[in-house]
Structure formats: structure tokens, C-alpha cells
Image 1 (cartoon, rainbow, N blue to C red):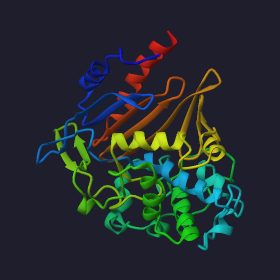
Image 2: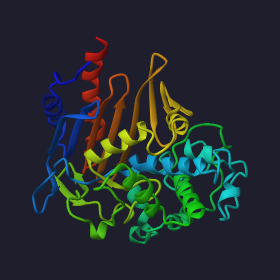
Image 3: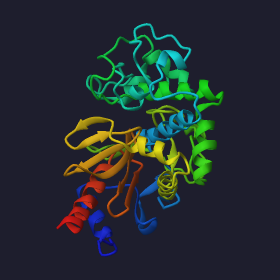
Length: 347
């Protein structure tokens, strides 16, 4: 099935009528760009438009980079998926279960209490009331937020989305390689994929073509940037900057086994933990099934001033990327496009 006939511009316009979208949408098939367009401003003060070459923060969408890095260390024999946390990280966690493995951390089944537990917290910005966001520059800067927490449940008991687990994975990468986490990802993932516009950039000195994240107050139409709302630089659990075109390069390199060998790539993409009806989590990636068969792989993220989704519909090798520099857009636009894809593919 080819998707050239889909009026993607019309689909997005309908969605924008519900609420204004600032960001970029790209749709490709068989690695060929079918549609790519920017909406709104990357910088509202200077009125710089969003384009396909704009770099966007993607929040938790970059957990897959951390997962790929861990898988690379497994391939090298430095660790295994069954390695215990205590055996690969020389940091004390006095209240953690000794049975926590790397697999548990990758699949959000470790049972540790997250530093941002969405079941009891609804304001991510409140994290920085006691620890300023401008001090969150390294993996170990996050340790005071969860190092002494008690367990939420026993390892392997269930799926419970967890950012702290990916901070631990980043610390493992640093200890096993002797490299700073961001430097490792740059050299072993971004450079390998030729993702020349991607990186972990500090919010106080963003390079050219970076979109500023905006938080909007709908009641009075007032906006502000997210510069004080998220860590000053991204890390293992989120915060990298990418372009829509670079995300396409990443997926291609992953499926071409340039980042991992075939068996390890399949392991990363295999449903590991059930998170809901027909929805599973692999290693850093969401996996959706339809009628018992894998239908879609997805990476996603949302922070104050950030909305991101990148989806691969594997039956027809279709990729949909939505990168937004406001809280809204990734989910709604992806769903509208997906609804039309389903109609075309299945009906």
C-alpha cells in the first residue's frame, strides 16, 4: 500500500483546528519522504519558523538511545541483560532489592520508586523547587532525588514507567565505558547514524536551529519558555535534541543492524512487558500489536514545552514523526494520521 494518496496536510489542518500546533510533521515510506512541513515558530521573539531542519527536544523519546547503548555493551560482553544492578554499578542504594537486573531497568519493571512518580505528582516543574534545574548536568546529579527511596514493588512484578531506572542505565554506561553518557551516545549512535544535527545541548547555550520549548496558559493566551522547567541538559531518561530527518536516519540504521547485530536488534524490539491492551514495552521502545501481530513501534516523549512521537508501521514501512515545541501535538496529530492509515490499510 502506498500513502501518497493520503491528504496529510488536510489531516493536520483538521487537528490544528482543535488546538494550535507548533512543530514539524514528516511522513515517509520505504525511507522516502512523502510529506514534511513545519508549523509555527521555533523562536517566537525572533519569529523564526519551524522547518524540517529545526532541532527539537524529544523528552523521553531518547530513552531508546540509552537502550541501544546498553545493548552495545551486552554485545561487547561487558554486561548481560541478567546482570544485577549491584554487580555493575558501584553506588550504594540502601533500600533497593538486590535482585534488580539490567533487564528490569530497561523494561520499567525494576520496582524502584521513580523520582517523578506520576501516580502522586502532576507537576514536573515542582521537582526543581528544592534542587535547581540548572544543577542537573550529569547522571549522578539525579541520585539525591531517588537514591534512598524504598521499593515500590518487587522486581519483575509489573510494568511501571520509570525515569530513575534509565538514569541508572546511564550511570552503568558511564562506569563500564569510562565515558560521559552524552559523549558515548554522540560517538556510538549519533555519529554512526550520521545524525549530524542531533545532540544533548545545554538550554542556556543552544546552537543554531534549535526550537525553544513553550508553555502556554490557555486562559489568557500567555506563553513562556521551558528554560526553567526541565533539566538544563538532557541525559539517559530524556532531553536530547533531534530533527525529523535525523530520527528517520536513526530508525534506518537500527533496522539495517548498523547499531546492533540482528539478534540484539530483535531483542530490543521484542515485547518484554505488557503496559496495556495490546501495548507492550521492549527496550526503550513501545510495541503495539493488532490481532496478535506487531503493528507498530513507537518512541515518544512529553515535557513542559515538548511533545514528540515517532512511529513505524512495519507492515508497510511507514514512518510518522511529530516533533512539537509546545506541550501539545505529538499524540493528537499522530492519532489522526494513524486513523486514516488504518482506514486505508485495513478497510
